[in-house]
Amino acid sequence: ILTTIYRYLSHAQHMGDRFLIGYPLRGEWHKGDMQVVSLYVDQKPPGDQSAERAKEFGFTVYPTIAETLRCGTDKLAVDGVVIICEHGEYPRTATGQTRYPRYRWFKECVRAFEAAGRAVPVFMDKHLSTTWPECLEMVADARRLGFPLHAGSSLPVTLREPAIDLPLDTPLVESVCVAYGGPDSYDFHGLETAQCMSERRRGGEAGIVALEALRRERLWEALAAPERQVTRELIVAALARSHNLPVEGGYPTAPVTFEWARQACANSTGYLVEHADGFRTTMLLAPIRDFNYAGRRADTGETVSCQMVLPMPTWGAATADFFTPLVRHIETMILTGKPPYPVERTLLTSGMVVAGVESLSSGGRRVETPQMRIPYHVDPTSTFWDP
Image 1 (cartoon, rainbow, N blue to C red):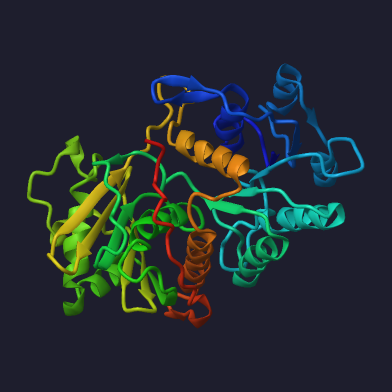
Image 2 (image 1 turned 120 degrees about the vertical axis):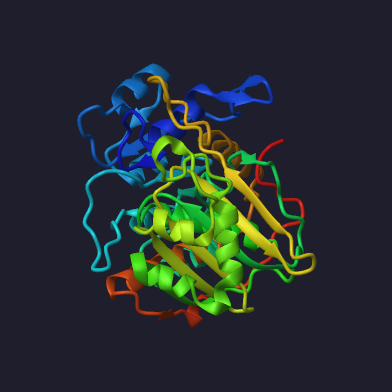
């Protein structure tokens, strides 16, 4: 495991502890068929748990990434790598993205693989990097050296309410996600929430050609345009899945309509994404506390919707059970060499974040993205969770 920090409630603690201790699966306690043998921690703020975890579970914390991959020997000595670059103090780019060392650490792994003459599966937590060329290079390196690259967040694989998975080749015309949080963090989660549904549409994913990111009244003015009727209906449908609508007392005193949403969620940020095949994705970061999806079928006119359930730590417990299916998928990928879904999903959503923060930093300018015409298809056997 390579991580920026390892302390209570960090991504590394949530995921690393599941590798060390196990987790509930199908009504039983599951301990994966693998061991954590080495750990690299870049920063050790107050509350760091790496030393105590190493002592308790018998692995070593190494001072460099190269030594972590070699485990004190002169050759590659691991069967899989988990890179968790989330949390910690790092500089920001000119467009406001935190410059986590995802790309740099990945390249160190690539150099170690090249020196060893063999490569092992790699998981990258959340998005790939903060520039499109770096994201492309990472995927190209994995293909060149022939190792599985699995990346992304827990949102696509957490439990859904209701537990729907769109059949492949569903004739969708638009997807909407209404979520919470801010750019350069939760925008990635919201985009993945939509993309894991959108990619199952008829013809597969075609890539994106433009993105416009807007805030507050400019966003709602754009959504009020006549050609955005379907978008408005899907926003209402997604909000109707929320358990945390932004109203005093927790329950609206008037029907939830687009005009209601415009008032109640006035201080929102939105990404308006145009795909190469004419498909649309709209992602709103609104004053709610959950992640909700809605999509429109072209054949029946039906709206399909659900909530991606995020059971947060409560009562002092560090459960955050949405990490469980993600770790399950990582384990399976390392053991079988087969990622649960195409890395192109995370490549595209990483690109959407890059374009989104660029648009926001320029005051909402439309960003053309012809370089992000990345088509892909989902494996028919893929599923969002382990049933």
